[in-house]
Length: 205
Image (cartoon, rainbow, N blue to C red):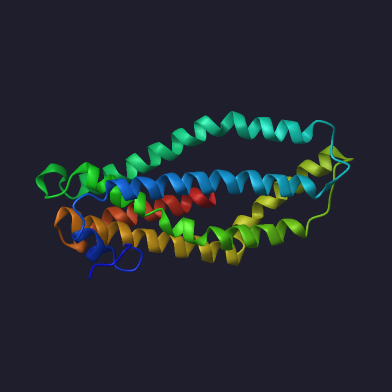
């Protein structure tokens, strides 16, 4: 009996699926939706920790988030396409048994680890923000304190979650594409590693 998801055995899962694209697309859309929801929740929590907030700050933050949303959605879509194109192209593309549509399906599923770890990410970030006591009466000081919050990315817990997600996604990409394109994992490992390192560094930035 084949696995219901590729989370633990991606090679067996994708080898037994004729078309991984529909479910991969669903996972990708859920990933984007959850990321956007988490962003708005955490920004709201951050604002709630500011005493004497400058007038209009909440409205400005909301407008800023809404304003960058189309660009963010475009970048998410481009990232998905680039990951699939790299995995498909590096191993021979049309000369293999797999298609670009298959690669998109596997790439979509590779975002599942982020969905699974989202509660842990939210919980830890929520805890960190709840410890803050920001004073909005001094805008210069507030700006400095907000910039300091960015250092939370390098917290050991945040890094551990990021490493887990990156490694898990890398494994799903390498083994999943090997199954859909009927090639060895050794052929898919290099492009998967490139994607993993790139996504890890981008997350830190």
